[in-house]
Image (cartoon, rainbow, N blue to C red; front, side):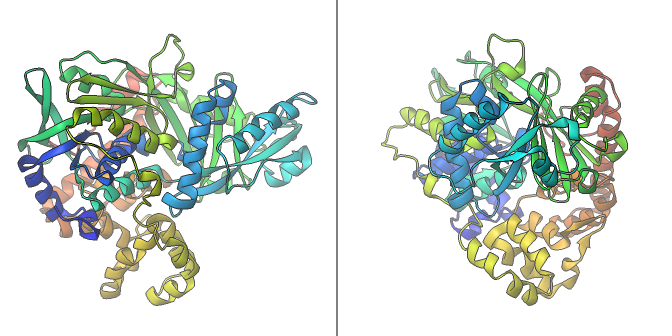
Length: 570
């Protein structure tokens, strides 16, 4: 396989070449799972000099890693649970992302912590935030700032007067989780890993008691193959137990899926200049600025149904509205909601029946000779989890494995980002775009922005906005196919862009135009193009209908009525 910039171009030619290498080469490490932990493990292994393959059954970040709260944060509530090690680790990772590894993707985000009790609560919160500001070492973010109730409401006029007696402002960080995970996978390819989506692990091959490889199926055309491995890493999140069971060995730990639901509402429905963190009876609730919108979440409930498509229910949505409306001057209604998404957190099972009490620490275990599983943790600490997984896997390799270096390996688009950000006006003139548009693109692609915009110089129609989604250019749709491995309309509208949650039509009004451009590049027939649009519209309709159902079982049944986009997925 090529390395360097060409290797990070995940187009159709790369995909076919990757299939050939998967079936022909022997890899030191084969990673199963294209979420952020799996992508991170592939990058970690490749940058240690190990021959590495990464296979994902669906799309990059198709499940948990595209449905988070989209924060890089220490986890303020974990301080109360006395998980100081987890918080310290997460804060260090947040700083790395902000300053060195992904400054184009990860941005500072202020939050307001409203105080509701006089006298005792302010010193209590202040001491916790002092720890939060200092546990991770030196930080580029401002420290806490104490505010009176009046000053807090100047920052957030949408708060009711009786909702707070004062507040403390503190900082965390935010990112587009799906784009970040994709960038980690592409960076792994840049350093020589063979990465391939729509490639499902369907079994293991053994030599005596040792696992020596993975049987795979191409979810697009049904081809089957075998990937030879020195060691296999199971980085499949909520599917951890399934993969461990497929090996025939009993896992060292068990994973429970916790459903988290978020609402997306237009920015003008809530008046405020900062995020909010609110206490709820069982956990915390975030109200997070997200481009021209607000994210409100999350819930925290057990989920025992379909793992690929967790469904939000009427009860979930009502709960979030009830909690946030306790503090808002103008209450939100169902009519204010533009998007809803549900994701599953893979939690290490504990003794408690409440998922909010389960551990967010991660665990690594050698399930069988040649197979290592990792589970738990949180998005923010993916890099540490990946390094720990590769460390554990090194015991199965016959050669010395160097230490992890990913704390010094910027992700694609990071190198040169700050210089280009200073040249945004010049870039805007060069491409005939508004400087605000260029800055938006820089915060999505970093120094790769010229690759995105270049084709538009020959075809100005690519500088048109996506119909029904003015935040995105048609050039981004093209780039998603030619460089980012988008194979289906769902990949495009749900993860390469976030049109599916950022528009009231949830991508339906954008589907035809995007499918037409994708069809030209991917060589779809008219029947295939039409089917892609029909499948996407059916998915949106099923999700809308599931959100009117009162409970998980009813919502799950409705959501599963939509046809899958990957025909050969087992």
